[in-house]
Image 1 (spheres, rainbow, N blue to C red):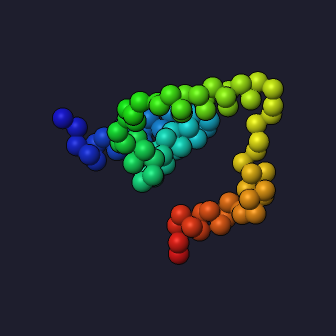
Image 2 (tube, rainbow, N blue to C red):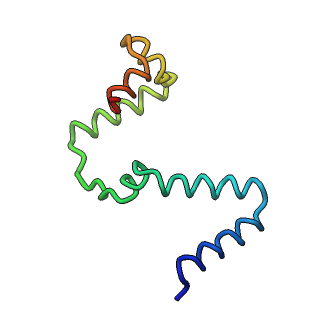
Amino acid sequence: MPTTTGTKEHAHKLIERLAPNQVAAVVGLIEAMLDPVSSAIAQAPVDDETVTPEEEKALAEAREWLKEHQPIPHEQVLAELGITQEEIDRYRNPA
């Protein structure tokens, strides 16, 4: 079985052989793996709750609405509510 040091050295050697765009993809993957939020999402249990008839009806109505209308951008919804993304971020992650 390879040691941790040996495995890391092997990873470094493989990265050195990649094209620049491949390195960027690998870096993104590693960053996602190290991000606690991404890790929590990846390890979260599957949502196995059944959809209620009311929820299914609301989803069907939303899908029908989208056939005739453009989706409303997130920024527009926030503007109409009088809040900013920064305010939401501060609320989620107070200093």
